[in-house]
Length: 344
Image 1 (tube, helix red, strand yellow):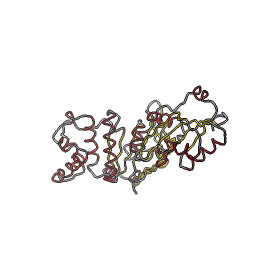
Image 2: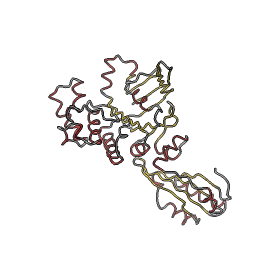
Image 3: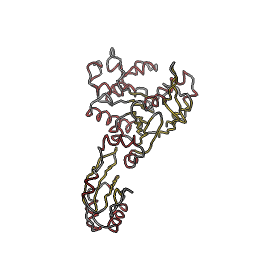
Image 4: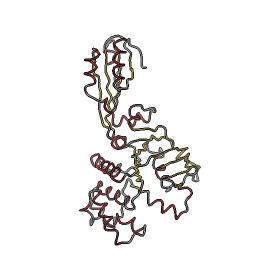
């Protein structure tokens, strides 16, 4: 649906130049919810503005659907942008216009006859849960309601893609969850491709199918949300995961006091995230298991959990336990072997 090929963006001023994007290669599939996460200055907002060419790449190609946006004339680019809706962090509503008129604005700009506005605007206000707010002004709305108006306005021209640039950053946690559920519903009902730019891992965890992690203008890690959570490869990614998973560090002195035996980090995904797994391990393999710490959460619609366990015994008992867990779909990392060795 969206492909960026070796995209570079260099900003120049009287002090010199700054590379905001450095060789971005990215492919987003039709109908998926794709997250892009990174700290401030990582290049996230510049990247999302490349997807509708609000920022022109210094080099590289941007393709949406079958159309290379770089090759379009100004007139054709304006027409193509109508199929790429955008939702902003601070809503960008016109304060002198009612909710109804804000949602109708893209229809006016596109030259849609005014007689056709009412049906479309009322349909969108119903979709975002604001049918009773049509005659109010933005100043009379809560932050979440303002963002719902922004989403309805972004959908006015029936876009194929919805770009959300930090769309929940100005909202409280409860309102954030309600907006994310709305975006998830819109994705499902309209088969819309949704791209979320954020610095909050909770947003990624809640609704995204895949995620790209950015740092210093580059994509440093990309994959399914489950894969990124279960096997983060970079320090930045691990820091973001700790936002929602907490610090999984186990004190070394505490581990030492446990005595002999293996320390395992077990990662459960999907059906393997069963609370009966440890019980089955004890019953069927005949090993002792001390649970040290753990958690189970949902990544969109998939259960994901981590469990740290201590298995007293020798290397044979350790091997039997690991073999049983892996046979049942559990990923096992050996933090300490049964004979007291280091990490593996």
